[in-house]
Amino acid sequence: MSDLINSSLRELSAALAAKKVSAVELATLFLDRIDKFNRALNAFITTDRAKTLAQARNADEKLRVGADVTALTGIPLAHKDIFCTRGWRTTCGSKMLANFVSPYDANVVEKLAAAGMVTLGKLNMDEFAMGSSNETSYFGPVKNPWDVSCVPGGSSGGSAAAIAARLTPAATGTDTGGSIRQPAALCGLTGLKPTYGVVSRYGMIAFASSLDQGGPMAKSAEDCALLLNAMAGFDPRDSTSLERPGEDYSRDLEKPLAGLRIGLPQEFFGEGMDADVRAAVDVALTEYRKLGATTVEVRLPNSGLSVPAYYVIAPAEASSNLSRFDGVRYGHRAPEYADLAEMYSRSRAQGFGAEVKRRILIGTYVLSHGYYDAYYLQAQKIRRLIAADFVAAFKQCDVMMGPTSPSVAFAFGAKSADPVQMYLSDIYTISTNLAGLPGMSLPCGFGNNNMPVGLQIIGNWFGEAKMLNVAHQYQKATDWHTRMPGGVK
Ligand code: GLN
Image (cartoon, rainbow, N blue to C red; front, side, top):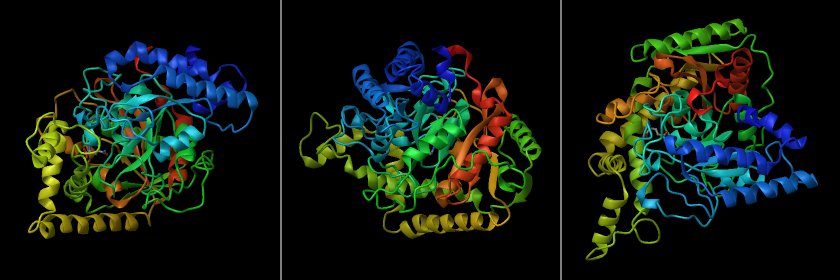
């Protein structure tokens, strides 16, 4: 059984089909590991053994009858606690929603359940997905399984830590400015943020609606392709969901890379990237050249403006989205207040943490009369220029590559006193969200203190299958994605 914790989703699927293991046994294996290791890692906010095993029995029944079986039936996964789950609480990492139980499932949750996947629980995250280190969660920080004195990245840090520690074979994540890719990089995993609109945001608690996108996190690109197949698709309940024909994201995995043109954005290889990260990325690029790819330098001249533009647009949208948390219908309500206005203000003052409040203040400011033109409108113009840079650069290449994060995982507290330093953690990931492009991170070696380094692949719009192909061919030639932290064996 113990080798199953390192198995790919395809291997798990084969083992289930051959009746070498049942869905109940598989779920029990991971639930037992959660019991054993979660106290130290704090990756899960909620688990419910009875609910998980009921889902697993259901999957076993489907497998027995042989009806309604997909490649994912009976395989366990866990959801970032930003996805609404009927019957399980959905906290979004906040005191505001600490006791909230959604009356419906998010589209992504519904789809993965329809594919027969078994939910292990809900994963810790930065409060309302605002953060890069998982230190803003009301439920306490998540520890990086590679070194528990270091952050796992954020905001999908619970997802990343849980997969790295083999507490789940796969997880969902969301990425507004880097929150799938950066924690994947810091924990040695593979994660994919799809093109904006490919995965429905219905039931995914909104942070910055024009940037938020859900996606898969797992050990390998092959696993991510299988998960994305089940997650993607048009949903009329999300007005920004795209109506496109279905795709098999695994279809190009085995294509050789001869002739692939990799663009290297000059702006991603300058100052700011740590030497250990640079060294690992350079070795990865050498491997790609061995696989038949060529590299070409490209320019993204406005990418230096991506972090400032993001920290106007994302807080602006957040301030609007989070206005619904007022203590009236659901969520935290202050126990004492004199009148309605005080009920709102006290409930929000008590329910939100410091980073969320900072974003609401910034967002309200940049949208206010007199500052709207100077900040919000300017940021939107920059956003357009950033997208135009990508259009021009993709004329010269098929995918782009660079580091996912400027450094390996850092120690708790190292950046929490300086929000700008923390915001720079996403310097290489944010521009793709602003442009709506797909991006991936995959492990490409180890840097300082033997911590994982992530290689970022940026695809063209709807280039998910291409990115997955490019990542999978590398993973066939290397074994970084198979490495497991020593402390959780
Ligand atoms: N770290 C970025 C932020 O705090 C991105 C977060 C995310 O992608 N959800 O806004």
